[in-house]
Length: 129
Image (cartoon, rainbow, N blue to C red; front, side, top):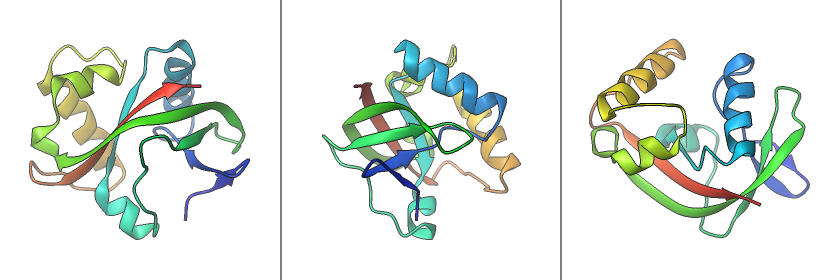
């Protein structure tokens, strides 16, 4: 189960350390309005999907809330079907879908999660509250 903070489920972006700091800064600046997770992680953590209108606490490495976001869209799709609109909304400077896919393959590979084109992912869209 994912941590709860102030009665909200949490959102821990990226891996702890420099990546999480960078992603949290992008959320706080308004540049990051989407994120992508593996559907399998929800089952492993016994978590249901987020829902439109749900508010999440964005956490730092110490488990402190640095922001609150509200979910505006949730889509479950195959990794290969993620749209450019979603990828660009991650705010990380990707220039093409191929660039986004390569970066996410590396990230998940580093975590030991082999991702294929048919791997189911959860695409979240949110706004900073």
